Length: 102
Image (cartoon, rainbow, N blue to C red; front, side, top):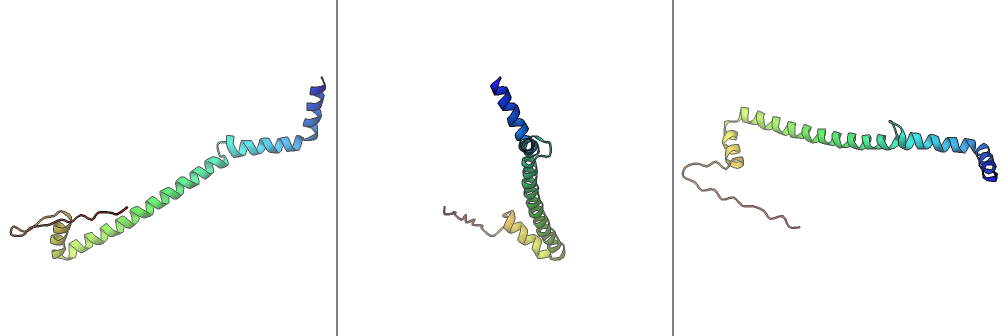
């Protein structure tokens, strides 16, 4: 009985602190919109924004290449030779690979 009385007085004395701690636990960890989930969503949003920026740059580079190919007739030959290793019948191609030093 003494423990029950102690618990009851403790709860009455610290009811605002207990309420605040429960509120912080619910908002911080248990709620659907918890702080932990919001931080995870923010991290994922930043990752996706970086990915969008990467693809936007890639799109701009590819658009520039496409415009170059449409305007310059010699660009088609250059791209075919550099990227696809095509050659003229009377020439040899040597490919040098660079070793990346770690």
